[in-house]
Length: 180
Image 1 (cartoon, rainbow, N blue to C red):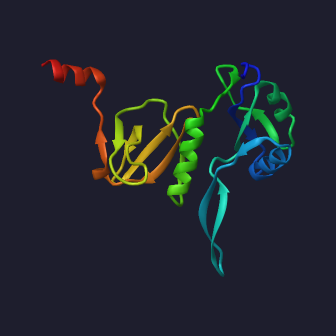
Image 2 (image 1 turned 90 degrees about the horizontal axis):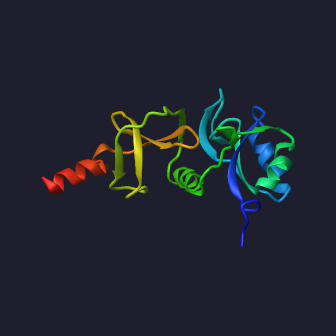
């Protein structure tokens, strides 16, 4: 049985610029569970085009550790700090890590944009690889829906057709429809 002191949780680490892969490799060698989401990026040079893997979140790496291991992680080469929320190390939910992994496995050439804290409509995806997933919509463009990972404060953007999205009514509105 885990005690609160030994339970492992995901945390975000802020790294030196362009050190994400190095930090992840070093921590993996230290037998820590690490996730450095990599995104496919098309690059063009004068003589060729190439698809390369770059960190999805610049200067961030995720690590799953117990609270007692956090001090050791902070001392790792290339780690600047542990990301904090309300003066405590920010905990990233397993569901959010799983969402990032699924998103990257299902979509190529993902972009990351800084998220707004204000969330609007709640939607459910009705068709496609993320079918039945629900999320808060920050913005809808012609064919683009932004899915928000609130703990991280970032959005993952994918091309999802408008006809594959349905608005979910707030519970109060749903109850009023049933009563009336």
